[in-house]
Length: 396
Ligand code: SF4
Image 1 (cartoon, protein in one colour):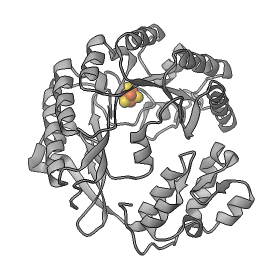
Image 2 (cartoon, rainbow, N blue to C red; image 1 turned 90 degrees about the horizontal axis):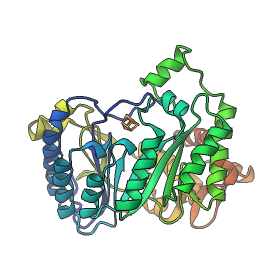
Image 3 (tube, helix red, strand yellow; image 1 turned 90 degrees about the vertical axis):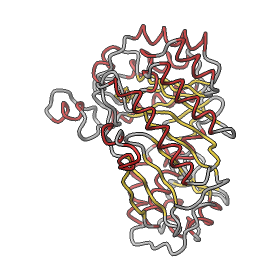
Image 4 (cartoon, rainbow, N blue to C red; image 1 turned 60 degrees about the vertical axis):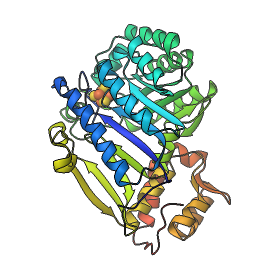
């Protein structure tokens, strides 16, 4: 692996436990065997130390502890994990942790405060009982209100709320109530996602069996655009397809969307790094706590895959165009040794159709393109099939 000493990287830590599996969720987590938590935390610390040593102690700038549900960790285990990460990251500029309302407590918040965690992301998703039921989330709206009271009282950093739309049976009125609740809670940041039915989830199974009816695409899009307008009217800036802020965007996620070097620790986490031959390598930890607990002897269940430059190009375009500001043309040229305008053969047509709007600094979707980007992303990806990248210098 290439020595990344003095290179800026982002760190993601995956906590693979949830108290209940939500019907729509395909993130890796387990809902039992919580007696393994201390062992998992120990192996997370071991895997983190191993990789930082192997990479030559890179400079960790952003940290994200996600899952799963980090807020269900017992406080002594959370404390042990945060203390360790705190010691290793003196130059961090942002540290986020995910939580669910039902497991937010004063001791959880105080523990995070103690080590300087700077962003709290709270998975609310909805305050409507019917929507929560469809999603299979076992939380009472009252518990959300109580959790936010605790946040107001104890939390010292910024906080973000996650909401979801395009849920079966959801109406404009329900979206309005959810978004009004979000806005009145006055978070620094809001994530507002459209539900996507993922293979293997219970909700997808229920829809395919006709137990629940999926929203028609037009209705689904209408709700999403409606929620987006409400957020924008309340002064939230839509800096990424599903993310809004009044103050600071999530720097960690921006690094992720811009495909900057990324170390993923914990069961199911993924790293994007570079090896000695200047090849981009994905390291994926198996989605298995038991494999992970075998530790160093079986490399924590890591699987390695070399990305060819063309795969990296595809990922770079898909992820970069999610950002409102688009893809930085100078950085793109430094990495791929070619201008993005020339790599995408249909650039001129897209510009004439008002889908993209480029300037000398950024290649990005126009307002129209941004609203319905999936259609255009498919066109763009089709058009770059067969494009060959000769030189790749990732660390620009
Ligand atoms: S949505 Fe969040 S809380 Fe629900 S199962 Fe997935 S990770 Fe766990």
